[in-house]
Amino acid sequence: MTAELRLELKALIIEACDKDCAPASITDDEILFGPEAPLQLDSLDALQVSMAIKKKYGLRLPDSKETRRILSSVGNLAEHLESWLASRA
Image (cartoon, rainbow, N blue to C red; front, side, top):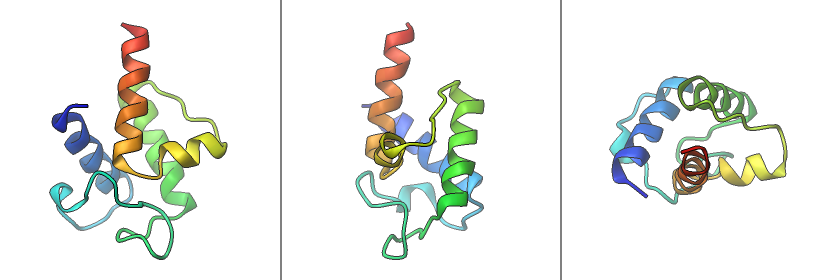
């Protein structure tokens, strides 16, 4: 996984969810959603992130348990996105 993609995803999450923090302040494996998460993202934020990913990369994330797992951290999202992009190449 490239550090560049992870940083790009962090910036996308911050922009989509209208958060005021630096992308570098988000660790790759920190939990993104819920009251115990540093960013405290919620279901509306998940929808915003999903839409931003679809717009930027073309990856559609259907609403499912798998999507929750994918969006649980930047590391999981980057891994899934890289795998998906590689399958299309």
